[in-house]
Amino acid sequence: MSDRSTSLLHDLSRRLGLDWGQLQDLPLQADLAACSEDPHLFADRVRTVIPLNHFAHRQKQGGFLHSSAALSCGEITLTSALHTALDIELGDHPFATLALPYAGHTSIWIDRREFVLAPGITALYMPGESYRGRSHSHASVMLNLPHPALARTAQAIAGQQDGASPCRLALQRPIVVGEDTPVSAELILSLRRMLSVYNGAALLQGSAVHSLALEDAIQRLVILLLCPQLLKETPADRQMAGETGGGRNRILAELIDWILSDLTRPLTLTELERRSGYSRRALQYLFR
Figure (cartoon, rainbow, N blue to C red):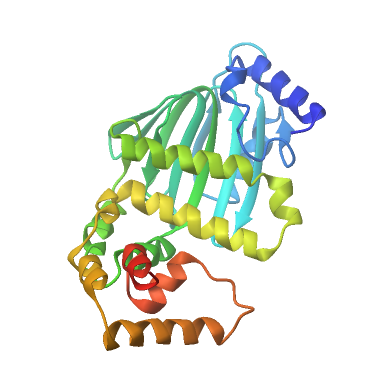
């Protein structure tokens, strides 16, 4: 982050009353953010992405302030935002959202259930239902993820097992994940580290391969957050570990032939899983 970008973000945090230390790894703000004091402009930006049923800013002093940046990464849209206190109500939308809070507090109501977003290693998954939110000054990252891509990734990670079935249910309901288990906390930390490394300028100047790798990694982390059982070794994995001879060699040869058939094609772990029908762990056993 340049000295100028650091100074601008520091000034924003001061004006919003947010902890500067919690914002230093907030992605995209350094290079792509657009700052506005016009609440109508903010509302118009929201409407281009999602139905906006109600919006009101609640800042008693200092007026409205909003800084946001958005970046498309394959089928995923990443939005980074800081804003003053507001009330908002959004309609149903055809994608899921993972919200990562960086600073400030927000309450979100989905079907009369309240979910609280506070600074820390937490995230809120929302499947696309309408919701109402009330925030104080707040900074967060929102990942908008298409349902078909999440379902395909879950099935690929599960491999030939039926482990994707519970994931289909998990993808349909809102949930707060994070500090409840060490595994969830580590997955969220990995996601935040990834987003801070792939800052806006780096992605815009990079190749499509970088974008593809980030898209796949984000989707995998989201699925594992919602379906941590996919991290466990399965009977199919153990079967591959014990596989020897012709069966193992045939699977390996078919996969290598497919890889060599187009060396210009970017490869991701999910694509290898989907092509082979085996999970990551089974593939690790296969290539030993």
